[in-house]
Image (cartoon, rainbow, N blue to C red):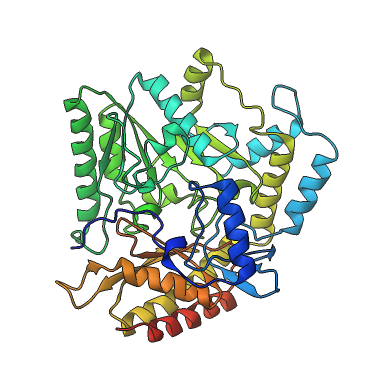
Length: 450
């Protein structure tokens, strides 16, 4: 099997590659690099310049449309009219922090918590998913009196110091501290596939991770898992694969933190939250990006006894967390999901897209496996001529991502080896959009050497 990748975002722009660019694009990139510097990267070998968006489409300055099959942040569509109106109205009325009494944050919190199991009774707001992960780790450490964290080996949980410390997907130079242990995520293509085997294997790995923390003299605090393991290549099946691992964590006195930043808010169609598919009860749930359709808002949802213990001893305040403008955006997002039945659309459109991807995989052995549910799908690219035919093929994934960009269809690549196409469009993505993506992918596969 190929070695794990050594760079993040292999499909990003590399100025040393000599890819020809138009003079205006080249000039804008040069200006950008001068003022933003090395920390900022651009997607695709030929970066996409955008001027506006609408629904599932993005448009360049010349008016050409790009099918957005990647961005989950505008969950209810780019430039959503309901969100615009709600934000503008609230911004013209009041925007302040939560130390003043306002009804909107209470109304929204009641509505949000109604979407969760009864044991998750309270919510704390922040501005970004990274910030919410940071807060969840603080809460877990406070109530357990420990700091050890177990994560998956290619996890991504954020960019603050604490969340980057549990995000190995940020690359080999993002060195993880001693209180963090990684374990291999379930691998649907290569792990044993018998009933219960994947779940038992992952639970065993989590147990070994906790034991490693103990060997280091560090007590275990929390297991945090993205509920669909998206950065590990997307693992939605088998349902229940996370449950035994959560039980192992609980037996060792730790909390289970469900990271729902990517799978949450109905993206999977079948449920509001990814953890629901696994029959588990999180102690804390982290929400982010799609919550406000691009307006900064995030949250940690949890058990009241945990929040009581934290709030009694720790002064927590976030100036912009839960502000009325962000809450207005979040209310509008829930209105759109409910009134337009976007969960149903995720199921319908996602099913059409998955069926088409499955058909392409039957015709082309380079598509080693199609995975996912709703509007969160993945295609693992392999080299069928090497070994047992399951060797990761990141170069092919890179070529497909950039080939699709050339046909104005935007996806990305992820996974431990960067060989998994990541398809995660806004929830307004419809069957005709699925057909466009499938046609473009079929053409790209035909154009690439076998």
